[in-house]
Length: 240
Image 1 (cartoon, helix red, strand yellow):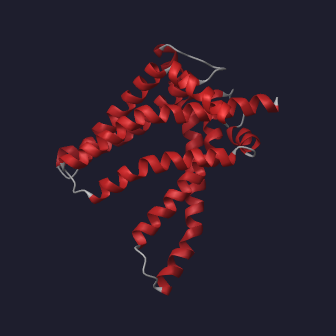
Image 2: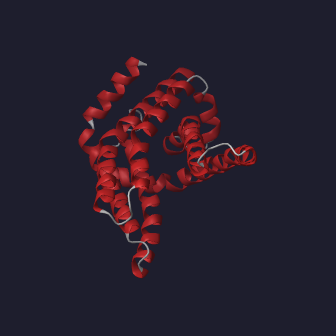
């Protein structure tokens, strides 16, 4: 694990400028989206907010693909035009994979509904909104760890390779490491979201916290991606 960490950090350090630039570009859309969210109740801003939500999802996926190709030691692409080309080429394949993961997430969430109603019947002293938020967070962390290789396979592999089949083959011996990675990512990011929920809308402090969160993502997430890609490629090489 330490060896993988060192290798990941080496790739992260060697490509830091490119990775940071890609993350920063993605964060600019997220910051704009967060800013519009503060004023989403205004008539014209609401239409812009809906548009920016869709645009942010599209841009995030394309940047994710570009970042993975910039990191990959086997498919390395270092110039922006090549990365953009790959981003457009693999976009719908990644979206299809994400939709399937979302479907699994909904199924997992449905399993918790009986527990939710049982707790309401028992009338335990819980804040049920907080409970639901915790359940969704746990499910998200599990799905991220369980299916991160499916996303990477959708991006890096030929179209004849089935992402979920490849994922099932590779995750088996790496789930613990991947779960810890997803957990660390969540622990670093969730506090900002909790603070933002507590802060009033359209406040400078709320926007400032969102700005800080995005800047941290610019620096931290590329390393998370690098570590995931290195585990993926190392495990894949062992199975060949």
